[in-house]
Amino acid sequence: NYGKTSLRKLNTNPILNASERTIRRAKETGEINPDILERLGKCLDVDPDFLSGVYDKSINSLAKSNQEATLLKAQFKVSDFPYVLYEKRKQMSMQYINDILIDNEIPISKLDEMPKDRFLNFYLEMERAVGKVLWKYFDYPKRSIHNYSIPMPPEEEIIKE
Image: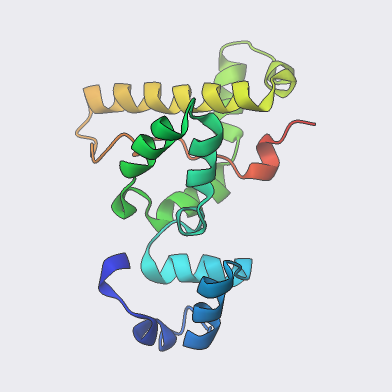
């Protein structure tokens, strides 16, 4: 959907409920109302965090160099970030990780004690590991390295004070 639409078509979409002018202004200023961003993602079938650059920022903070970040971001495909990932992330948040820790008798407090960068690395490694197991045993769609089974939690849930 993402590549097959225009602002004019979006303007008539009742889900978006925002004018073409509003979207153009947001594009020019780089700022958009979060509700409009969510509806835009739904109309385009794209995770709003992908549209807003959240994933790019995560890669920039985790990559060891600008070159590594650029190479990783070049692998991003819109089709790997459907709107359903956003919905799944809202639904599951950290419960999946918490359940794994509890099942393995690891106190959740250990996760809370981790520095943010270590937590993000842990989380990404968990995603990759689960994805590999699913791909091994199931006819799981292997579109790219970004098609993991665990959704990244909202930023406010992973910020360590």
